[in-house]
Image 1 (tube, helix red, strand yellow):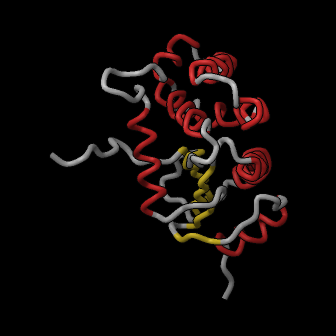
Image 2 (cartoon, helix red, strand yellow):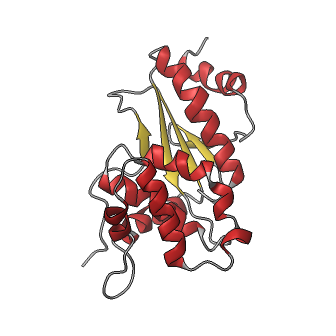
Length: 201
């Protein structure tokens, strides 16, 4: 029997354009400060800019755990748990976790159990409108191992491994990996994206 496959396309998208001209894919780790920096710029400035202009631009995020942060898998799994309970909750959950990223640093989680970290994430889920008990059930252990969200995380891990993604954040435009910087301003993102949206010559 073949391994399970995702029942819908992977990726946490902002907007569902029928025919986007530019799809910016971002591979992000919830425990990675540069990922946080890039995410906040893209969510707070870049996406609103192109959305207001009704450009055919779409953002797509992929959670990408970095295993040298032991708590990273827990944080990234939490995003998918939120999404499984409410389809449009992934982006608010990502933003809320990033805003409290320091609470989940290596130093601050060194002596915390997995259950304690899950509970902290459950409090964040509650803040964005997801009932904590339902969220915690998604992170509960199943008989035989793993949680009720582990398979979803496995799909994302398999996806980024197949693409050879190592560094976070990593970007791809229209399916092609490319060089960007987490420190880019809106103007620098525009200088990168605009020529693809509106090529000349």
